[in-house]
Length: 453
Image (cartoon, rainbow, N blue to C red):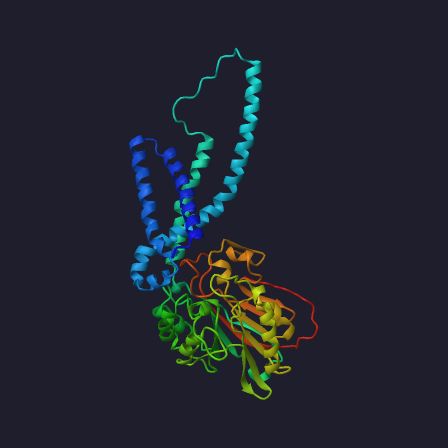
């Protein structure tokens, strides 16, 4: 079934870009015969490059694309996804100045109309000015037509972002992370975090095996997966299970579910949970334990660490997927897990949504590991005061990297896979790496926030 609103927006974006490109052709190609040929090629090219994108407007497009061999995805589909990224970026860049230009043109038209009437009343007998002959390229037409020349450049950047792969995987430097009440015996414990794998059409078994090999090179004590293991379909679970089967760590591998896991497996049920049961069973078959509002203790007695796993508590596909709709349930579950963890126990929380950190601070949770934001939206235009400028900046409080408040830390992993189209610009996939160190217990500290991208 087509998604009408998105499809109509997509057509309008293509029309907007076509008009800009057509103007560039008309201005810059002066020979009439060559101009007609260039316009025909332009129309045909836009039609052909948009044909593969039709699958994106089918609700079950992930099932179609999963059947396409990766080599054919790269040849036939990736050029089109680069085009989709191009028209979106161009619209964001061009829409504001276009609106300003339209307003200025309107004001100038009104002004010229008034001025013309005044001149006609004063100099009706004056001879008319001689119009310039020929299609001269004025400064105004040069500026307005040059906008079309930006599009090939944007497409080149988008194609680079699309064809980038896990070879550009960013393994972050090991970060010393203070944990309140951490016993001396657990000093130096290392954790590797993976997030947002989105196993599906674009991330498959081969990609996961490479990811696992890079993870094992770090020789971690603990490996955690912070949600969105699958993209949209439970049919991708075998790829995920086979690809992740080789992860090695001395204290085990643990996971929590994200919103896409529930979307992929929303019809499975158990006595305690609705959705995600098949994914949990699949991960368990290769030794990965999923924590669903659970606490486990690593170590024993006073030499132990409470690992807390928060299940995804948000909405259903197509629903309002914002943190405030799950915040009350999150606070309730954190309170229950706080009792299970025990007093003066060092704690690490796994939670898919980074805004959980706000509610984790009152419980003195030393480190919260999250994902979900894809580094701020996969396409980052730059970083200002530690804030990545991308689509996610309007939606998430915590976007990417390390945040510290009131003696507690949050790390938001940029993820491995893709949300929507397979593109990352200035936002490479990431393995994050931590070493736990002791810190004073949290006791009525002042609020300080130091975000880093």
